[in-house]
Length: 90
Image 1 (cartoon, rainbow, N blue to C red):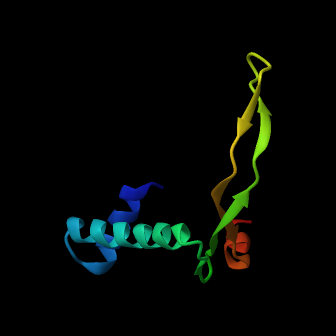
Image 2 (cartoon, rainbow, N blue to C red; image 1 turned 30 degrees about the vertical axis):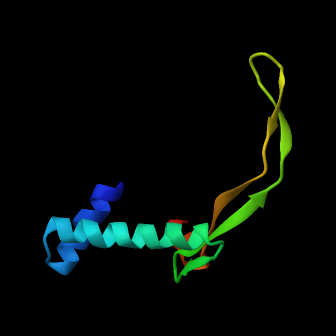
Image 3 (cartoon, one colour; image 1 turned 45 degrees about the horizontal axis):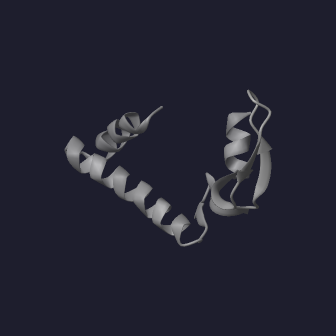
């Protein structure tokens, strides 16, 4: 499933135009991204928790040349699936 399929599903439920359905989906995604940028967690009942994890700086190795490369510290998105989602996928 991709974003367009989600838009189609929202369009079918809301009985709106596809443009309006796409705006709704975009707003949901934008809200999640904005909260993560602020360092907040986003919890969706039955789905899971989106959060931000700090990754420390480290040394990595280029597999082609064997050269050591410095990888800077960064924040990365993280997702923890809810029990309901895990059970549904089994």
